[in-house]
Figure 1 (cartoon, rainbow, N blue to C red):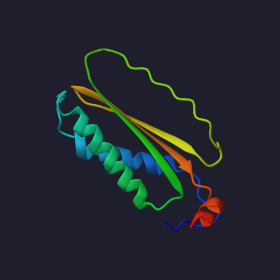
Figure 2: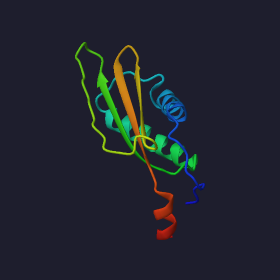
Figure 3: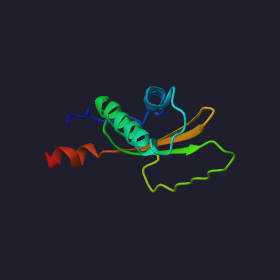
Figure 4: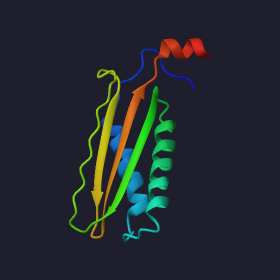
Amino acid sequence: MDFQEGGEEFSAEDVETVIKNTIAVVLESAMYNPKKVNDWCNSIIDSCLKELQSLSRPYKYVITAVIMQRNGGGLVTSSAPFWDGQKDGVCKVSWDNETMHAVVTVYGLSVNIDNQSEMD
């Protein structure tokens, strides 16, 4: 994969757009169905990953997706990354409709370009 010299900062705005567009395609008219949740999560993750890779940015991505029935129950998540705060980043998008909540999180981990060129 060809990365630009000097790298790029993690763009939460670009990642957010990818996530929102993907969720809209996969879940737009869906009603909660526990039998479809796994497929929906996989579709969201696969689609986000393909779109992010097509941006050809110097990042490795970790994506999580949570879909749960909207029934008044709570959900608390947390994470504690140990990374380069200047280059790495995270973007979380929450989405819901009448029957479900979805939370998609993308972690972008910068690729060290100096080490990458040595590995080629």
